[in-house]
Amino acid sequence: MIIAKLNDYRQSPRKVRLVANLIKGKKVVDAQNALDFIVKRASKPLADLLASAIANAKNNFNLDVENLYVKEFKVDGGAVLKRRMPRARGMAYPIKKRTSHVFIQLDTIDNMPGKKNKVAKKEVVEAKAEKVVAKKAVKTKKVK
Image 1 (cartoon, helix red, strand yellow):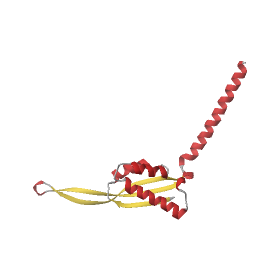
Image 2 (image 1 turned 90 degrees about the vertical axis):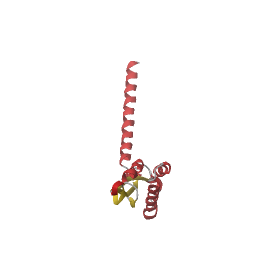
Image 3 (image 1 turned 30 degrees about the vertical axis):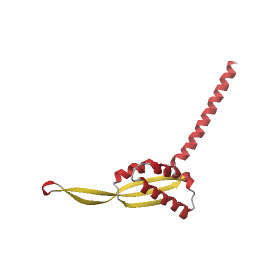
Image 4 (image 1 turned 135 degrees about the vertical axis):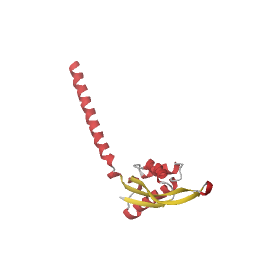
């Protein structure tokens, strides 16, 4: 499992999660393409973070980019900068400038949770299709 982190990114976690949730679970190549076309401010830093995770996979683990997918993409709240805005009659209203901690985890497609199930389902469907064909063949023999 390959990880990369982006700490204290100066955008609220709620806004960053919109982009992160779009690419969670996708293959790395598809995730890169998606981040290139998403029109949100968070897409550029998240694309850089994904590129960093890919570089970690290549250099540290000698893995091929084609065999990777985004296993986890987590966005947590970071430090909150508290500021004040002057208002009428000498009052001051609080402003919270939020930051985000972003965590990405990549894994190989071999470990993808749905892949084994898809292969098993395909075998079950093929077996059922063979049974249906055999039943039809038996019925047509009886009719003749």
